[in-house]
Length: 142
Image (cartoon, rainbow, N blue to C red; front, side, top):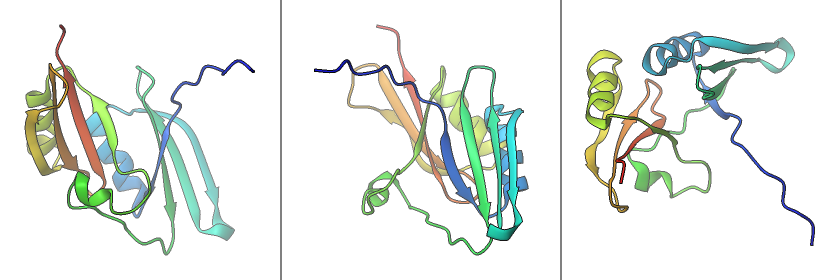
């Protein structure tokens, strides 16, 4: 049997309606300040940008003219369609991260900080300005 190669997460791609607005929000909210790549395909009506932070988090934003939004009211509603449902980010202090995103960055509350199924894990959900679900996860040291 062949050896399974090692896989590492590289990036997530997010279809957006307003590329500059989403870039600005994710910069302010998550510190994605490095622009790794930009691409414009005028014939296809597509513009992209890949932003990253110093720890290796990468998000690709793809704006396509005429695209239609898909928004889910909560994580359970998101599972009604078979697709990626949310972006999950581990944070050191869930309460502080949740409050900052909601109070300072304008994220919309979906579910407040709550205990997770796994001991020592807590989670919360917010929507970004275009309604995409973001899960925040805090894992306590055992």
